[in-house]
Amino acid sequence: MRTPRSLGTPMRRTPRAALAVLATLAMASAGLATATVATADAAAPRAAVVLAAPAWQPYTSYAVGAQVSYNGVDYQAIQAHTSLPGWEPPNVPALWKVATGGPTNPPGTPGQPGAPSVTGTTNSSISLAWGASSGTVTGYRVYEGGTQRAQVTGTSATIGSLGTCTTHTYTVKAYNAQGESVASSQVTGTTGGCTNPDPPGKMAGAPYLYMGWGNPPSPATVMNATGIKSFTMAFILSSGGCTPAWDGNRPLTGGADAQAISQIKAAGGNVQISFGGWQGNKLGPNCSTPQAFAGAVQQVINAVGPAVVDFDIENTDEFENYTVQDRILNGLKIVKANNPNVKVVVTFGTTKTGPNSHGIRLINQAKALNVPIDNFTIMPFDFGGSNMYTDTVNASEGLKNALKSAYGYTDAQAYARMGISGMNGLSDQQELTSPATWQQITNWAKSKGLTRLAYWAVNRDRPCPGGGVTSNCSGIAQADWEFTKITAGF
Image (cartoon, rainbow, N blue to C red):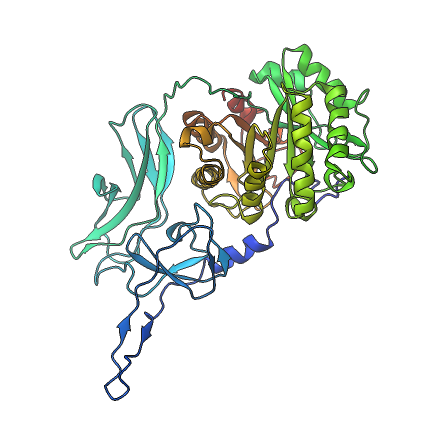
């Protein structure tokens, strides 16, 4: 059984020791002297020669202090790391700072505006807000690339006359009589009205439902209130050795989980079954071979008849243990061969810019082993997010880049193999995903052709403003089942 952390949440989050370090390092200030070398003539005065920094590259090991060039700006590494697609220096201030010679505010101009965020969209407009600049500010200009799209005196703007279901990336500059500040960080938004047909392999929106915790609601009640047709049932664990059970102690048939699944199917729905999670005694480390692991999964498939099996690979025992990663992946090849009509999903944590090294390894190894995975789903929460829409989009774009690199996909092909599993209301790290933000995330996922959408959890899809992170409500003001109703629209 899972051990509660604070209020009983079965932890669905990524290991965060490294993320805490990144968050601390992100506070580091920029600035470093340009590297110089002496001339070879010892008799002559030693003239300083500026060294050109090499271009930033993915999949490269960088030491603390290493300098690179990206889009004409030099950056210095403030943490040793191996770079990944999506971790370009401007995107990860926890890893890189601008070196001397990078963009600085001209004398007398305002400071750099705070990071912009998307606050609303219509079929033809995107609304933005950002943090105020320091210094004397006359106003702000919003740019799309090098083209000015708006000029305002406050810290918000709406850009109109946009096409339906189109994506736009903006920066903001403050200005006064002395000139403009350096640009803010980027933000990307997508207008509404997307009517793209569902891509092949599309799964119904399926929020997690956990029958062992959090005053689980009747799925039939939720279905009638929201129109949701699918749930991700959590979690299958080891009840000892390589024997599966709900939460490691409830039977596959005849218990509360089986009764809930019967309700869902009787109402015309289907289920996804999630194996693993953050805590508990899992099958991956306990099944000694891929064949044994596949056999345990087959017992669950035979008992439940799911449309999807979801392997929530987390923590040091599965995600960071490559022997166990490989065991699971090779087991999934057997599962898919024996159940070709059951979709196979792997779910794992992420940084704000995409999968970390363990996630990249999982993707690359799945390709190397030729594992027929239908969908790679990331969990964009509990990673220190401040703008959950922007951070979720950026993390998803990082996943897209990783899939393109591993499989040679186009953008569209990569999106069609991707999913998002969020957390409604307040997360364990007090990140806030409101219903409006979840609607934005859902709209973006639909516009890009993602094929899976979930969140943790239906048990928490009830209001308790100021209630904190609890098992049976979201910690915020909302209507009952509001996140589930949005997810049903996926």
